[in-house]
Length: 634
Image 1 (cartoon, one colour):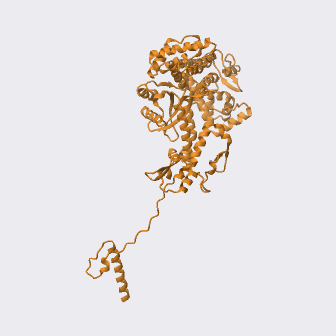
Image 2: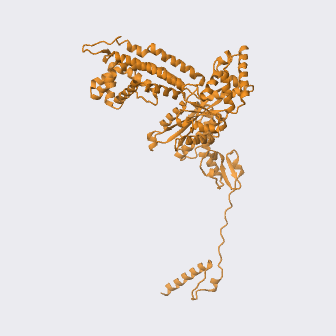
Image 3: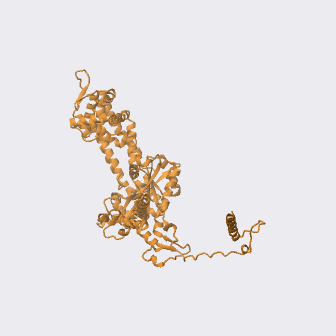
């Protein structure tokens, strides 16, 4: 017991000693305090700290990317900062060790640097790609020693999601910077807009840019993808703000914006509050163009909708498509019959889309090529649905219209594809249109290839069969016939052609900005410049537009335009070759820019004006190939 009391006493005294060291005193009346407790105890001195490491200037030798901030006392990597990479060298590191610098140099930061440099070299010289050899982990161009030193250790592969995203972002930045530099080198540029909905039901705005760049000794237009932005609301205000924000983010001068090309939707070209109207309030000299390919499709669709039988004809083609494409059994029967008859030309039945009406040509041609096999499958099945489809396609009227449309829609489809060329300018639009209209006119009096082949198997007049019905045999099948059907078929086809011509006339007339583009096209036409004086109305229209663009005053524009015509004629009189196309005349203006700066500005606006927005449609098609339902669900 005595020993336990002694231990408790020692324990309490040690506690009091600890408390007294921090300035506490005992309030109890017990005599626990001693003179030793009243004296200040001796506090042990701290251990001496190691001296802080300093930045060694020799580390910057052959490392231009390394930067030391003496005020913050931190090291930074300028390359990683410019590449928007997140690591300790972008946030700043105060650990001054050479091994950290060397490790960063061999690691991800240096990899991004070399990938960026190599990408820029490949972008400038695509043939360099042929000299590359792929190693197990990383690409290594022949003759390059930098990429060989990138492997930090056996555990670092740079294959994580974050590394791949950083590599992709680095490559994207190089390509985008190159594109922006090319656009900045052009005096003017034009944007092409379109909006669409992706598989995740998000509305997106896609923007392409058309500008001028010098290739060799010629200045030619180029088109490239600029960006895509998601829209919260697809109205004119949201689209305008997103477009302006995108152009400013890319560092493009909006004062050089010369025009906007759209698909003609009301939200784009609305006269009160459309996108074009809003942009013109800020930049008055903008030219607005409506996609030629969209106008052609709308004209053909409008003409077809006015013919009652053609509306029914489209419904029959869609029913045929669904009958085979949505039933594997029917499709297998069709392929089997085609193999037996050996009459298939490799064309499958296609669906008719009203929004893409010129794709109708492929649907009609497929029915014409596979008619014998399609009818054979329906007669073999003999179900109610098959017989219901067999009735409307086994008559003279259907076959006549099908073969006629196969001939008439082919030149229209060729015209549509021509209008979707990226290198097409406005000087070729009217020539292609007038030639197509002449071909359509000839089809009324001179049947095309498909219709001529059909009429050779048809009697000149309806004939009665043994049952007392007007029928004839076509490709081994009985077809109903009558004088009424023949007259209605001819009337439907002629009405469609006249409707197409009238619709094209109304949609392709020169109104608004189309007047300016037509005047520019005629002015730079070689025949107009060399053989005859351009109409004074064209010079007035061009001069007024250039004055709105603040290029020069109206009087100065008119004088220089006339002087340029005389300059071209003088070159022809001196046996100098001016050119055979409008592009050649524009090159003359560019080469003589010091003498004719106003004419050069007019030529720039003609060449940058896009004919169609087909590039935007191709961009959305590529987006849908990348952003699929499977990837969207991940």
